[in-house]
Length: 248
Ligand SMILES: Nc1ncnc2c1ncn2[C@@H]1O[C@H](COP(=O)(O)OP(=O)(O)OP(=O)(O)O)[C@@H](O)[C@H]1O
Image (cartoon, rainbow, N blue to C red):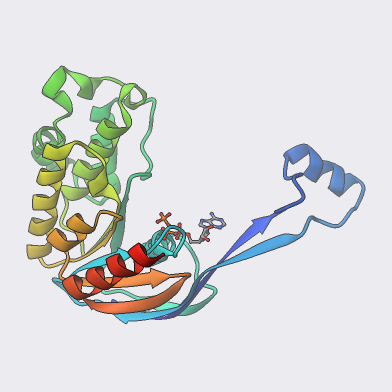
C-alpha cells in the first residue's frame, strides 16, 4: 500500500454561527440569505509512507493528531483533498464505531456483518459458532438472541471485533479495538491479530495503549498535528514518543 502526499480537509458547515438546524437552513433559502461560513479543518497535512504485506504498523500520536482520519481515508471512507492512496486488495476498517443494527439481535448482526464482508451463506453457517464463541457474548446467558441495544458497550465492541476478525483481510485497519473489552478478551484479540498477520495481510493499529502497540506491531508511525513525525522500528519510535509526552 502506498500513501502518497495525502492531505485531508474536513469541511464544517455553519461552524461558529450556531445555526446549523434544518429550520434555519430553510429560512435562509426562503430569505435568499448567503449560507453560513464553512470552516475547514486541515486534519492530515501531506503524509507519505509505504506499507508491505505481512507488516503490522502502529499509528501513534497525541489526541487530534490525525490517526483516525488517516485510517478512514485508507479505508476509502474519507476523500483526500490532494495526494493519493494505492492499495493492493480491499482495506477493511475495524473500528469501535463500525455500523451495527441496534434493533436486530446479535445473531442477525453476525450474519449480516459476514455477508457484508463478502462471505457466502455457506461460509457464514460454517463460521457462525466460532464467531459467537470468540466474542464470549454467551458466557453469561443467551445474549446472542437479544437485540444489540441490550448489550454493554464492551460486549458490542467484542462482537464487532469478532465478526471482522473472522475473515482474512487484505488490509486490516483497527481503531482502538484492543482497548475495549476486558483483559481476557484483549489477550484473545491480540492473539487473533497476530494470526491475521501471519495470514499475510497488512495490519494497522491505532491505539493509545503503548503496550498493545509494542506487542502487536514491529513498525510504528508517529503523527503529530497531521504531520508524519517519525516512522521506524516500534521500540525506537514508542520510546521517543513516551519521552516527548513526558516533557509536554
Ligand atoms: N468529522 C470531523 N469534522 C471536522 N473535524 C474533524 C472531524 N473528525 C476529526 N476532526 C478533526 O481532525 C483532527 C484529527 O482528528 P482525528 O480524529 O483523526 O485524531 P486522532 O489522532 O485519531 O485523535 P484521538 O487520539 O483523540 O482519537 C482534529 O483536529 C479533529 O478536530
